[in-house]
Length: 118
Image (cartoon, rainbow, N blue to C red; front, side, top):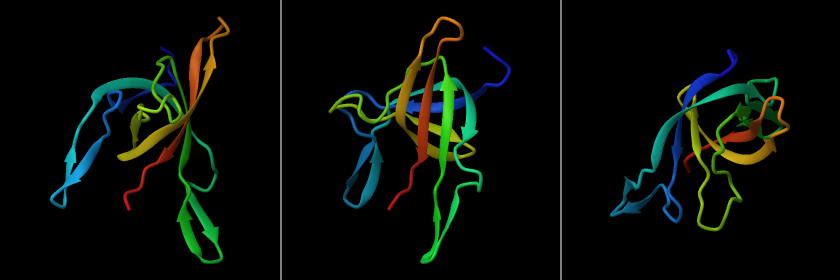
């Protein structure tokens, strides 16, 4: 493991199982597999995730992550939900994965977007 990577909490849902559902108005978490994965973390935008627009401000919070671990992303299959990575107490969905297995430093590059409820 290289010195640029740091441990982050990852929640990976099981195939065909969603993170939860509302029952009688209360959220019931269906969980998933929790693990710790080492990532190199790089923000994708320079203004810290805040986008100024004429109608106000919108949080535009994305990261580029690098790791040796192959994780679920959006589009991995009809019954697969993306893995959730916790960065600085916020949850991010893995939306895209590139495979870099050239033999020099094999790794995966991910794009993660912050999750918002509501």
